[in-house]
Length: 426
Picture: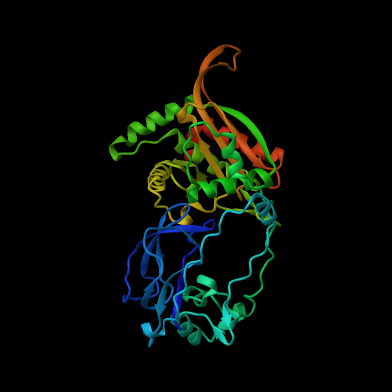
């Protein structure tokens, strides 16, 4: 029976994407792991690999097609011994629903649970030929394994990671947590308000839709509170200038942001209870300091994650951050490079912003908003007035994860690290 190749969900937030380019044509033979297409997701352009082996029997969605819904059939794959004659009437991509009327939209806003993707039909278990061979070698019952491929198809990775005991319990599923749904906006009513005024209508791309959904969720469901501190940067600026002079021959130039990343990573180790994320019915306290950093790109932003940042040198963090930022702007990051972490940094200081409050990126426990370092009069320890470079910071905290005193302790550790930069190298 020919296999449907479905539009994949290449990121956790992807609901639809653009089939940018086919890398195979009808009649080509493919194996599991072969790259067969390039897909533009809500975050990046990514390669799509085949999960089954066979021959491309028919391409259903032409390259360049936008707004292809996840799990829409995009091609048909013929298995061993099958030919084009075995292709039934080709399934057509599901048509996009027409815009609902306001009353209908309000009724439809009530969330309903989607049925699970089928993995079996009658006595047949949907699995790739390679997965079947591996399962037979390992003595696994495929009917007891939950597939991660399109529509629940069992693929190579599922059977390689399964054991007979684990497979028997793999069907247990946790109930999904309910999330408040925002009241839908009536676009026609908004447009009517501006009748007679010149404007340009900009359709939402996948990234902008994702940003809107996630930030709405964050502000509706996360109990934010805010802690504010300033740090004196003169010792750090002098130390940075000294290091950059010594590193110039190696082509390394450290930024103030590199020191901020290092300071936050060490602070999460110094205050380990704050190195945590919200997981619905529990809190996960992380051991490594995985720090996300917001990177502005055209039309949105990414938050690539610097994993094990507390263990890396300033020069290593600088090089990695430059690489991640460059690939983020080119939309070439893989999902594992912008997922995870417990803490984020958003720095608008280079744009002259003195201070601001950032929105927490769930499931993170906190995010640090960094303002510009400005020359200001300050009172010295001896009571005299002097001029110093002062940087304002605001820590946005999820009160479900971090209480006020713990958040204050974390912010104090960040300030101490920034004001004593040499200690960060110890």
